[in-house]
Image (cartoon, rainbow, N blue to C red; front, side):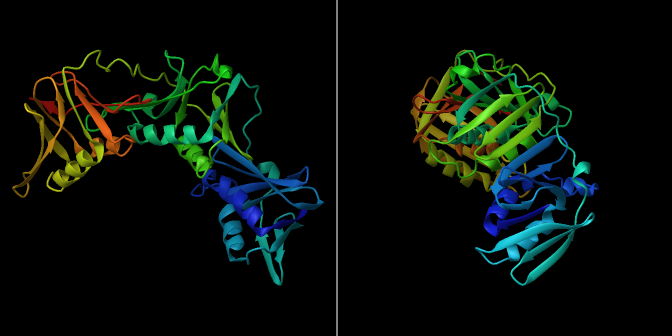
Length: 376
């Protein structure tokens, strides 16, 4: 292989896929990227055996070929080269590549491209195009709740499926006794989504997809395809393939209350600020007591038994129903409030020891549910 490529083009391509490479793996080939020539461009591929990401960059091809090169070494070299420079890469010997930029020369160890593991090519079951910015927002709003409990692998990813409403829904849930709840965001489902069987995407793959979607502009689309027990995501020139979790996602709508008995509406920023102030005295557990009092007053309290300190704050709210009290995870509450994009937030209670729903005021396509730690 012998190519000449712009430094910026190759660096951009490497950065687009390098996050997939298993850098800490004992296998040198998994901490490498595969460079392959074809059609006036070079393809750059990284894998960790379960996830594979590929992108392309234009280059001058003097002779075709392929090589696998350590991704960290290649990245370090590219970062030291002057902006706007051209880099030549050629196979020097079966075990090394020669790289030249101006007067700088490098001899870098490489691995045989045949040793680089690739995911097999499979037939596509179905696919659809989704606005890239909308998908990025949906994943950001739900992925924080993915369960990290290795004994509950059915919750260890984001479930992407067609909801009963006909919308494309991204949903995550957790049930670990401390941060238990459900979060989902609905998106318009294109006609081609008919027959989409649903996909439980591992959290690691979700994070890689989010990296792909960073900086996408309005009007850009992302392509989603189901291939047996795998999902393929295409954003621009970058393609990511990931194995799916082979578990049945929980019936996440089961804890959603059919009716709510009490609740309030308040400025979301004011509630967030008050919760943060109270949390300064809540101790390690981060517990907060919310007291909704008749007359439209919300009291937020915290106590730190270890030091004997406490804090409380009061907000005026628009109240619905009778007063109530509950104890909840304050950090979980802040995670939800950080994803509220409307001026006001709606908080609804459904009874003693039952779920609390927290949603944007008005017509919202997102939904958040959290379990209280106690109600009295």
